[in-house]
Image 1 (cartoon, rainbow, N blue to C red):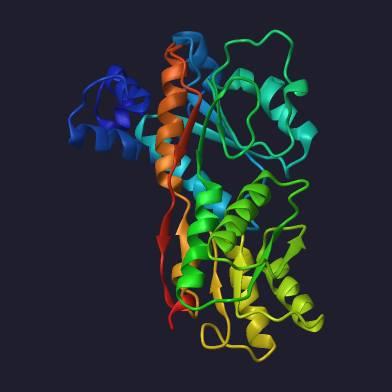
Image 2 (image 1 turned 135 degrees about the vertical axis):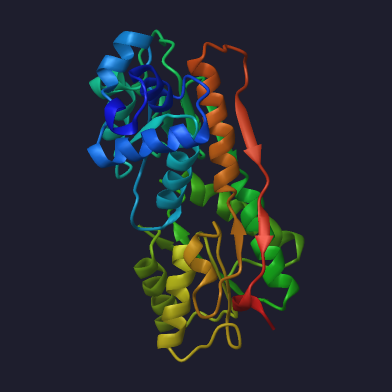
Length: 324
């Protein structure tokens, strides 16, 4: 590799490991040689040399259904790469045993730390004597004494509901996960209901969905219409559900926003390109990853300063699905 790039072995090491100051043109030659040769760093060897693997884990429930976690993972990979850090991604399907294995299993010997979004893990799953392995939690569930970074889910739903009311909604159908098993559903429903109460409106109905995907949003609205529910707006507790609801309404001859207003939560990339473009609440993924990764790298470097919870405020993004 050094011969192909026309540099010394030391220079190659400095570029690959991000440990030295190398001229941009020289670094570009090394990176081109890395790509041509298909080089991949040996994490075990790196750990033996430096005491660190140069890699972190990202553990999430899913990557394909809602769009949220796929975009979160993209932010983690991109931001970690700027620090010269590899990311190993593990999907748990929200299964408690798989979350525990990802956190405590042998794979973590290849990692310097983990970013974890857990849905089912509890304090009972942790060892009685905590070790010092760095972990930062993403999302609603607090486990152990780990740092946690999240955006305010209740505030997000409150913002979306307040906006729907402000543009004329009087009977809002909420569509989303089961609060008995989903912390996100609990918090988002609480924010929705708080906004209704503040406006003097009663909750119309909450259609529970098992999944948080497009199909579930379509099926929920179709079922509500078939059962005679009367509503002039839909709040999807995430964007995938809201977009599925738009499709279900259209199939039933109801237009958005002319007949039924629709809003979601998360601001996934697809929301900007649908017809109509979706009004939603920005879940601050990039900022969440920036804060969480910064915390994790500080813990890896040995920082033991108490921190706890970091909660970011959401932002309303108004688009065509609520235009009146």
